[in-house]
Length: 126
Figure 1 (cartoon, rainbow, N blue to C red):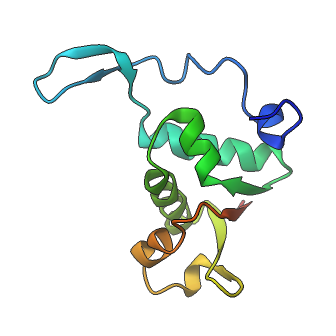
Figure 2: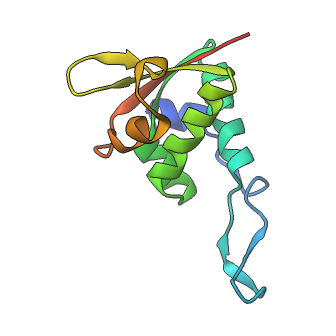
Figure 3: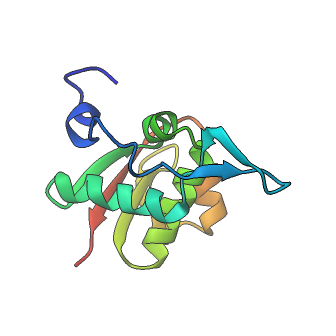
């Protein structure tokens, strides 16, 4: 994240409060080195980014994924979940043109078609 990028202005410098829960391993032991980021937090962050950018944003799943150390596919799944909940209007590149999420065959097709880290356009719905 470069100092002058849009992400440096939109993502707060101190986000430790949001990801302060220690991860719990399969055996139920807490691991102090790995932090969990909930799906709800990812959704709130996507909505916050769109809200901070006048109810519309161009979101890079690769950058959010790297910033919060979560898989990029998980970010894309949360984008589709928000679109299905009618909280956002989601548009993505289909290889030829921008296409609304509603025109894709399924959420998995939408998620899997963006493995190259392209940007998504998100508009908040009131």
